[in-house]
Each structure stands twice: as C-alpha cells, then as structure tokens.
Image 1 (cartoon, rainbow, N blue to C red):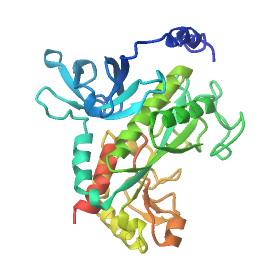
Image 2 (image 1 turned 135 degrees about the vertical axis):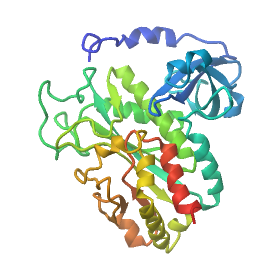
Image 3 (image 1 turned 180 degrees about the vertical axis):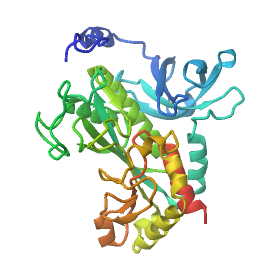
Image 4 (image 1 turned 90 degrees about the horizontal axis):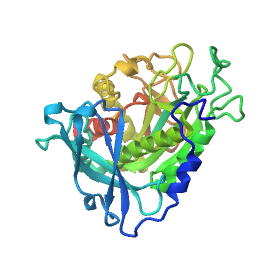
Amino acid sequence: MTTAEYPGRLDKSVLENYMTLPVPDNKVQCEYIWIDGTGEGIRTKCRTLDVVPQKPGDCPIWNYDGSSTYQAEGSNSDMYLHPVALFNDPFRRGKNKLVLCEVYKYNNEPAETNHRKKCKTTMDKAKDSKPWFGIEQEYTLLSHENAPFGWPKNGFPGPQGPYYCGVGANRVYGRDIVEAHYRACLYAGVKIAGCNAEVMPAQWEFQVGPCEGIDMGDHLWVARYLLERVAEDFGVVVTFDPKPMTGDWNGAGAHTNYSTVKMREDGGIKHIEMAIEKLRKVHQKHIQAYDPKKGEDNKRRLTGLHETSSIEDFSAGVANRGASIRIPRQVAADGKGYLEDRRPSSNCDPYCVTEVIVDTTLLNK
C-alpha cells in the first residue's frame, strides 16, 4: 500500500521521529473515548494529566461540543464525559491510557446513546447470577473506494467456500490488520479471545470474552476503537454494516454467547432451556434492541439465508447455525454451558444486547 493509493495516508516513519522523543515523567496522555449520537460512531480526544491514573475516577470529568457529534444544538452544545474504564494505550505506549467514557447532557441526564448507564443498573441487579458473555464481532475491511478490501476492481472474487478460516493470498485479505489489532488488544488489556477469517472474503471476526456483566460492553467498544485505529494506520476502512454486500454473500453479526452460574453447573441445560423459552416470548423486543436502527439494519441480514434465521421467526436448536439461538453440540452433550444468540447485528450496541438478555432471562420472572 502506498500513499498514492490511499489519499490522506501519511508516512509513519516520519511520525516515529517524534514518538521517540522523551516526555516529562509527570506527564501522561489520556485518550478519552465515547460513543456519538449515531450510536455507532466512536469519537476521541486527548488530555494531559500530571499523574498516571490508577482507576477511572482518577481522570477528571471533561466536556466536548455535542453539536458536532449529533448530540446537541449549537446554542447548548456542552456534553460531559464521565470516565468509566481504563486501558493501556498501544499507540502511545508507556504510561499513557485509553479512557472509556459515558456521555451525559447539561442536565446530568445520560445522552440518548448512553446505554451503558441502564446496562450497569441491570447488571448490578443480576450480579449474584454472574452473567458471562462472549461476543463474536464480525466486520468487513474496505478500500478507500468503499469496495471490499482485496476484491477485483469492477468484479467479484470466486463464490464463498474457500475463505472461512482460509490461508493463502487468494483466500484472505488484510491479515496484517487482524494481527496488529489482536496484539493491540492484548497490550491494552482487552479480553480478546481469538480471531478468524470469515465466510465472505475481506470479512473477519474477533471474539471478546468471557466478560462478566458490564465488562462485556466496555471491552467490546474499546476493541472496536482499537480496530478502527489500527486500520487507519494501514489506510483501510472498517465497516460494521450487517450486510455490506448484497447478493449471495454472508452478512456480519455479533453472535452473543451467554451463561449464568446455574447454566454452567451440572444440570445447567435445564436453565439454558428455560432462558430460551423466555427469549422466545419477547423475540421482537430483542430484535428492536439488537441493532441501532431497531431492526431495520438487521432486516437486510436476517433473511433465513447465509446462516441466519428469519427476522420474523424465533427458532432454537442444537448446532443449528440457521437458528435464532444455537445450543453448541458440546453443551448438549455435557448438559451444561451456554447458549449462543445469533440475532445481534455486527453494528449492535453491546450494552443494549447484554442488558436485554439479562433483563429477559433473569429479572423478568
């Protein structure tokens, strides 16, 4: 990849000349991260602190212009960033930190896309059940011309089949980005669990978890931020669109694995089946929560084809990737473990997804 091929991409070797400059011992760069008014976009800005923060509360509440992030009018534009989680910064390294934040309005009410606050309240109520989550985040790499990365210009690659978990330059595109992202997550302290090439060429997946309660949303949002930043360095675009290519190509989801302490104990299959029945009764409520556009984005993906169940129907089955809820075959054999909800879209808000699952299965008796 050259600068000429990717307009706006700079020579990173020049940057390195400055990033190796020594900085005062008492100065720390903290990158504040938040979700904008679209519910999907990530915004950040940096602040210098005089001490290394040890916990989120060590970072001051900050503000920004909400009129430029689809969150406020210009006449009353201040929005407030409340630090909630700390991670190591793999780009600046050293003592520098990433600071995940909740967004609040001028009246101290959560912003419309601050779903973390409600999620945290729900997780606190259910903490004795120790809800664990693992989310399989699918995404697609695009060129700066918004075509899938590595696809032939004005054409298509061969049909799906050889790409899933593939190896070889004719089967996978963008592995350097995937490897860099994985290492960045490990350095940051994100609970990344694995990665693989997906069914559509230029589509990939990484898994985060197991995370308990609110940590699932925190770790997935920071993992998404790291992916966007890594891809930026490579001059490649990331999309979380759940159906980036029409036609006979797989969409992208955020399959959500879920268990409670009772599900993980001997005989837990009974509690898994009870949870599935509760989920069955409120299928449309979950569809509304599983993408930022309340089902409109997911409608393009959940067609009943390409390893999905129809958005209109609820189904469950052992080892069935065409069902709404899959019980892994090993779980059925062991009689305990977890369930996989295959309905959430790749651009879902994990706070919304995990909150509604816990609310349905644990709090609504």
